[in-house]
Each structure stands twice: as structure tokens, then as C-alpha cells.
Amino acid sequence: MQHHWRNWLGNHSARPQELAAPDDVAGVVACVERAAARGQAVRVVSGGYCWSPLVPCDGMILSIEKLRRIRHIDRERQQITIETGAPLRDLVLAAAEHGLSVHSPAMFMGLTVGGLIATGSHGTGGSAATVGDAVVAYELVTASGEVIQASDVGSDRWRAVITNLGALGVVTAVTLQCEPLYNVLEVHEQVHYMEAAPRIAQALDRHEFASIFWSPAGGIANFKLGNRTDQPATPTRGRMFPTWQDKTIKFTGRYLPRLVERVPVLTEVMASLVSENIGTGSQVVREPDFSHYQQIYPPVISSEFAVPIERAGEAWAWVVERLMQYWRSGIRPVNMVVHARFGRPSAAWIASSAGRRSCHLEVLCLDGNRHRHLFASELDEKMRGHFGGRPHWGKDIARPWLAAATHGRNMDAFLDIRRDLDPKQRFLNPYLRDEVFGLGRRVVRVAGLARSATAEN
Ligand SMILES: Cc1cc2nc3c(=O)[nH]c(=O)nc-3n(C[C@H](O)[C@H](O)[C@H](O)COP(=O)(O)OP(=O)(O)OC[C@H]3O[C@@H](n4cnc5c(N)ncnc54)[C@H](O)[C@@H]3O)c2cc1C
Image 1 (cartoon, helix red, strand yellow):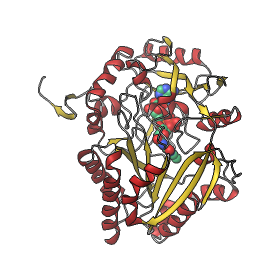
Image 2 (cartoon, protein in one colour; image 1 turned 30 degrees about the vertical axis):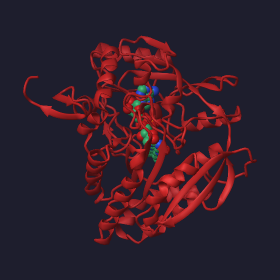
Image 3 (cartoon, helix red, strand yellow; image 1 turned 180 degrees about the vertical axis):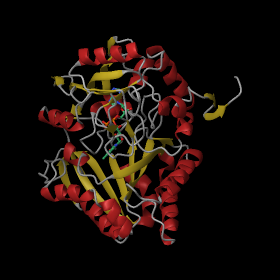
Image 4 (cartoon, protein in one colour; image 1 turned 90 degrees about the vertical axis):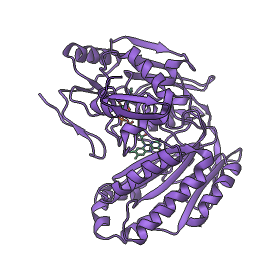
């Protein structure tokens, strides 16, 4: 019997032979063994929010949505052990209740711990790398059905697990290092969009946390900045807990892409709504309210590159200039927002921010934007080729066959670990095997450059 699976946006789907949703780790082991006995591929899914085709496969899609328990909170060590099917919301709320903050949390709390770690996802902040960088112990079910429990921080295997693409096995639980819950003095600054690029370096010098937003429909760039403070926090409405207005937007949001295609002027209305949502003025808020101020998303699709932080201003300026050229000729390939965040180097082999401080530069479009692909390819070429950027694995990647090469020898180190854990390539789908890793076709990887080869080598 064939089943049907699709991701959140509906841009990827599959008809796997089995859709499994085990209740516990023993159930996960049984699934992996069953798939192995049938010779099926296994792809793990948790929230299904991924924009790239990491999940689809025709064998078994193994959902870990039922593995969502918080196993242990160690207040003294500031560590939380949690199952990876848990949404970020459960982690953030439990942490806050125990006086803790999560490292580098992504903005949307519906994303899951497993998916965030697998794709090298991140928030923003001078001391923030990826969610995975906070892993101090993990439980991994491998292709042979073995359950590895390890706390080998810094080892080659740990560096693979903390951005694993679901290609090593099923990470069933992790222990995350947290920090004491803190407050943030948030400041919002609005500048003319042409002035944003030269302001980036100064904003980073003065603030631990920085995000920048600009909608090509509006003339203003919003800087959302923050520093830790001991001052008491002001209670906030909405943010982590959507208001009824947010819920209305969620309901109408599904019609937005079609509406905006027909009535382009709506993009300008949206630009001002986005701007309003980001906030104005300055106030002290609790860290979770600072990090998770937006929980409702219309159907959007995102592409993101991590470029070296020194090149952030230049990369931002290029995106703005290019998009304005498009807009002046009536083409709107990015009709939501351009967004930049910043972080410290990741220790993962293949996180987009591996080994260097990075600016995570993202463009968000409403789904169905027929001009999106024009700019997506151009963005890929420029960010990768010119700025040395690396794509975010969970977001839309225009040229996946060139993504692996952006990691140079780190990708080889990752693939060595992968081969040891999964020699029969159980945890790969065609996208990962052929397009990303080039294991199906022959690929020659030469110092940061990958090319397909038909000749024997
Ligand atoms: C609305 C929205 C907001 C977002 N905001 C941010 C953001 O602020 N920052 C950011 O960096 N990214 C962000 N993303 C991207 C997001 O983090 C990634 O796309 C992520 O993969 C989605 O997570 P998920 O939990 O739904 O995982 P899924 O889509 O279910 O899975 C993604 C990948 O992780 C693997 N995986 C999942 N769980 C496990 C596990 N337990 N063991 C092994 N592999 C596993 C899957 O096999 C797959 O390869 C956002 C995405 C959306 C849709």
C-alpha cells in the first residue's frame, strides 16, 4: 500500500511504502530494522517544515512526532534532555520555567528540535552559532539498529551529528546546554534602505543581537537590535502567543500569494505590516519574547546563505541593489522580505556557518511568486561564487549539486562519518545521494569545487 506525504508548504511530496510514527526509541529501532529487512530507504521527518527535498523517499518516511518528551532538566548544569520530535515551543517554555534560555533559537517555535539540529538552523547573536552547537549529549539510532548514547563533544562524530541532514540515522534525543534566562534591552531603528549596508558594522559593534529586515516594497530597513540587561522586563502581548489578529492573518494568509499576484500593490501593505510586527522603539523584554516575536507565517519560501561576516555589508548592498533593479522594471522576485542575522562560527562539519562568523542572509517570497526562480539562481551564483556563501540546508537551494562543494574538505569528513554509520546508504534519498553528495553519479571534489565526471576516476 502506498501512502502520501507532503511538507508544510506542499512544495515537496512523496508516496512512500510506509509512513511510520513510532511511540518510543524501541519503536524507532523496530522501524529501522524492518526497513533494512525490506531493503528500503528511511528518511526521518519531524515537523515537515523543511523547504528543501530532504525528506521525500519511496521507502519509509519515519516520523518522530511522538517522541517529544522532556526527559530531564538539570538546573545546576543548565542542561535539558529532550526528545527530538518536540517542537521548539516545548523546549523554550520548559527552559524559561526553569530559569533557562536556549542557545541560538530559531524564530518560529513550531520547528522541531530534531529538524533544527539536522539542518544547522540558528537564531541570531554574537554568542550564537546553531542550535546543534549546544548539544552536549545525544542518542542516535543507526542503520544497524544500534542505539548510540554519547557525550563526545568535539569529536568528529559529534561534529557530524550537530548538523546531520538526517543522513546518519535517527537522533532520538539530545541534551542541550542552556544558559541562565536573561532579559534583553531591544532597540528598533529604521533607516532609509540605502543606508542599511553601511550601518551593519556599527550595529554589530554595539549590539550582541542584530537582525535586519527590508521589504523591497518599502523604503525603510528595520534594525532589530538588542543587548543583555539586568533591568526588569516589560510584559509583552502576542509574540510567543499569537493574538486573535495573528490568527486571522494566519487564516487569510493562505490566500495571500494568489491575491498579491493579482493586486501587486498589496505587497506594499504587507511591507508596512511586517515593519509593524518587528516592533518600534525600545523596551526590556525576556529573551524568549525577544527571540520569538513572530509565530504566524503565510505560505512563504526562503533561500538563505551564510556569508563571512566581514562581507555582510557588501552582500546586503548587492541584494538590495539587484532587487531594486528588478522592481523598477516591474518584476518582483522577492515579495516578502530580505532578512539578515548574525552568528558565531559553528563547530559542525557542514553547518552553513561552519568555522567562521557569519551573516545569514535570507530572502523570503510568498509561495507561487512566478518571478522567484529568476532571482534564486542569480542569488545562488552571487552568494556562493562571489561572497563565498554557503546555503542553509533546510531552505530552498537553487543548485544543490554545488552546495556540497562550499564545504570543501569538511564535506569529506562528514561523508566519512556517514559511511561508517550507514554503509548501505539506508538514510539517503535520491536528492541527498545524487544531487547533494554526488554518491550516485561520480563527483570529483577538488579543494572546494565539485564537478560531475563521467570518466572513471
Ligand atoms: C516558518 C519557518 C520559519 C523558519 N525559521 C527559521 C529560523 O529562524 N532559523 C533557521 O535557521 N531556520 C528556520 N527555518 C528553517 C527550518 O529550521 C528548517 O527548514 C528545518 O529543517 C525545519 O524543521 P522541522 O523541524 O520541520 O524538520 P523537518 O522538515 O521534519 O526535517 C528537516 C530535516 O531534518 C531531519 N531530521 C528531523 N528530525 C530528525 C531527527 N530526529 N534525526 C535525524 N534527522 C532528523 C530530516 O530528515 C530532514 O532532513 C524556518 C522554516 C519555516 C518553515
